[in-house]
Length: 472
Image (cartoon, rainbow, N blue to C red):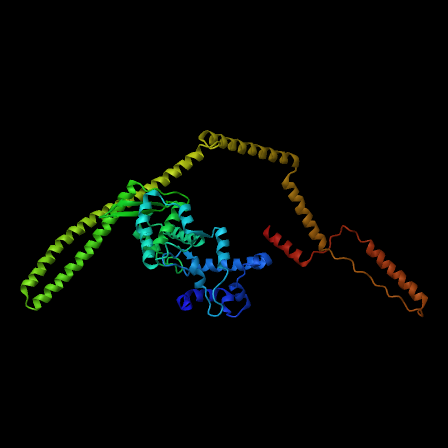
């Protein structure tokens, strides 16, 4: 029966923890055994088992699988072991050690200690007593007659409360167009049903959450705020995270207008449905030949139509007022932002070194520096001209002449080396002497040629001379 009742819990632990997927593993048997004596014999094994069960309990709690009849954020010490019962192994035998350790680490807080630590504001303490405490104890009195004598030890799972509160704050600030003030019914509608994981918040859970939000996140709470036809509990979030909200008379008036608009909207819907129903009823009576009944239905429909028109006009007026109030709030925030920006800019302008006189002085210094730099550059330029003292045109003409001379010399043919073949050793010595004397004469004649004689012009130079003569 326990396995069927907690099938979601069983599926979750088997899919997220390897030990639970293996039914006959020695590790799972060790976790389900009474390992309380290991605190003296094997401290490491004891701490390992405690840490394992601690993680299992916290994960299952944040998934909403350890709920009690009154709470989803609280675990019951007497029924917790039953939720983890296995078909063969049975129940865990050392949960007392686990819960004691978690309580020392302030992960589990007894319900009474939580209510004292996160005390609610006095304005809505009466509402808690009337709507939560009395109803809870009345239910306990009917279902568990021995609960007053032996109350079950209940622990608030603080990490789960923190996770849900953080998710609520993030969701609220994620919607910039949402309102910061709402009624308890609006809060319940937005966050009570499976807002995070599988957690389904009860009225008692909402009370715990509001305590924590008020104490840790600056959420303002007030009851007995007069609205349309009744009093409402009002919840107001801060404008920004880290601030503390306060409920003013303006907020109470806004709640009154909103509840009136909502009530008028409900009335308009009901009147419209009744009017359509009377119209169909008149047609049916007419078809049956009941003319008097048909006329009576038409008269009622006409009266409802008149009331409906009045309600519509009233609702239109209230909607207009509400829109103007909300737009005025937006305008106020814009003006506040403008004021903050102006104050910040004024503060910057008022700092040392940022004024009209200081800016003028800085600009004058910059101008003087530019002028000094220009004078230095002009002086360096004049000094370079004096140091050079050479005409650039004259240097360029000399360079051109050198290039031209080099071009002419490169066109002069070089003398052809004379190769002298030595006679054979068997040749006549007289022939050799005569041949050597003849070669010497030729060499001397070549050396006696004057160097001033210009070599004959090449083909290209001749053509260029002819072109120059024609041009002249």
